[in-house]
Figure 1 (tube, rainbow, N blue to C red):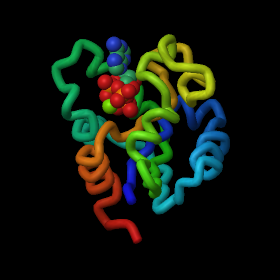
Figure 2 (cartoon, rainbow, N blue to C red):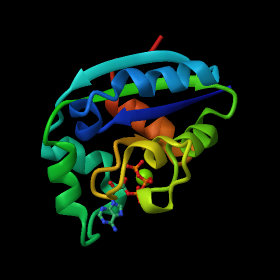
Figure 3 (cartoon, helix red, strand yellow):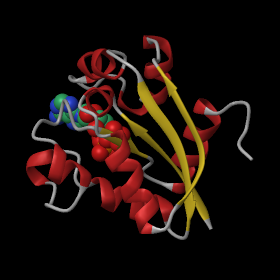
Length: 136
Ligand code: ATP
Ligand code: MG
């Protein structure tokens, strides 16, 4: 069994998509293990996206994910990391298939509603960063 880290970005929260997104993960059969609602600062966001430091869109990405509160969650179940990524859809909403979260709710790569861990290793790192108190 696996756990993955999923974060509803500020646009997803502001557009009122929290309930719909949580329902998708529940209906798929994943189990919610942890959830928090918080606004992150630039330093924390830079740690979360450390792998992307130096990319031309990095500063804009940090502006975006710190612009309002987010919903940080840990979801548990078989294949949660890869299946979670499939449920999100491609990074660029123009390439995301209908039926995926980004495919259904986003048009702009800079406002793509949701983050999901891209590997089991990233999931472990991200859960440790966002839930340092541990999850039950
Ligand atoms: P995330 O890590 O947020 O789940 P991802 O793994 O699909 O997304 P990454 O390559 O990790 O994609 O990029 C992180 C985020 O940076 C993207 O979700 C998007 O918001 C932003 N981003 C990526 N590429 C671009 C780009 N070319 N222009 C603007 N923003 C981008
Ligand atoms: Mg990523």
